[in-house]
Length: 475
Ligand code: FAD
Image 1 (cartoon, protein in one colour):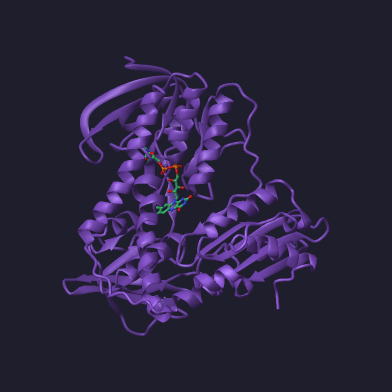
Image 2: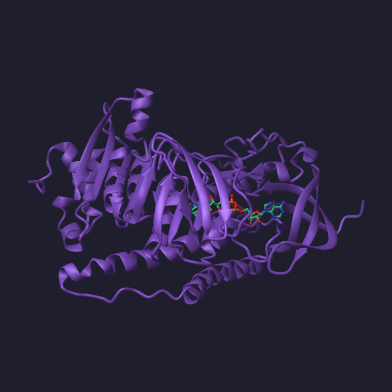
């Protein structure tokens, strides 16, 4: 058939994986085309993920903090919320970033083709062009011939089959639209995304129930950190139902009735004004015609890749959410650089030993590398050192002395292999522990590094000194 566009590098999807891959490819001299069905670049992360959620969480933090200020002698009125302005603020934040990306693409001469892409074979992609503010098909098609390709088509929210179609039942994308502040809200799924959105809606005035099939919230994080989080968040929730599932949902004009089953299920049906389903994300591998290109896709829709991000078809690479867990933007960006560099003939490979995770809740919970849970499961011999923020001057001054910093050391080498922080700004601090792990630091390296005083970050140095037995800041 006729070819409309020729390129050296085709990137499918313009999320953090896709745009990073496209920019690096262009910087390395390849004529690059990026295909994206939506009108703005940035994918889930910028448009309906990391960024809008953090814009709203910042607002939630300020509301939460102000609500305690009467205790220190400064009282604010109860907040009044103008949802239209809050939504406009969020859109403005997104617009700044997606607009910036468009400029960067232009500066690098990355061509953006707007449409829905499907592989025709291992060297051709057909794009059904899209238009308008969403991804409406325009009816027009274009065929791109490429020499190499990077698949960065991402993931989407898992849809529970028993949830009816109703505007009051939303996924994270719908929740971020902020159409209403419900009186009672059910969050299905106690993972990071569910709890971040619960934090936002609770700060805006909703009462929240959380239902989680597993035995704990935020699985992956160490339990002592989650316990601190739970204690600080008790006031937001009417019920946290662990080991419980929703089994029936009936939509009525006056509310949505939900039946539960499991260890902590209430006997009666509960009525909600809004339900957020946040039970995980599923990769888009089965929706891009990968089989026509000969690219292997797993039953669940993931595309397996090697350390150089190559799929089973050597000139086609995969990056980001579509290649596997953890589904995090910073992982996708690193994979993107590897894929582009390998495609350009460089000897890169993905060799990060650890990838940090952060719940940007209030307080934040951040962890990286080996956790106590993992060490226990694998039988790895570790030492744990913990610095309670009750001994941190800055934490006391800031009213967050409930937090802690924890480091995990290899028992034999005393090298740091993991860490957790719970408290405000934990996410901003966890990068230091990640660097220490990547650099092979031991407790002395960390403890003898002079951290600025008084900061929450100096707790990392103090934790290392707790391990060494040289910490003088503990009572
Ligand atoms: P995506 O961002 O999913 O982008 C894929 C792009 O490909 C999309 O724009 C899609 O439209 C496009 N596409 C797909 N198929 C086609 C096709 N056939 N043709 C054309 N275009 C196509 N991660 C963090 O690291 N930190 C956070 O704080 C964080 N918060 C989050 C909060 C929420 C509410 C959600 C939902 C996610 C959050 N994430 C966070 C996860 C993060 O958003 C993802 O890991 C990241 O966006 C994945 O990047 P990606 O490039 O793989 O794919």
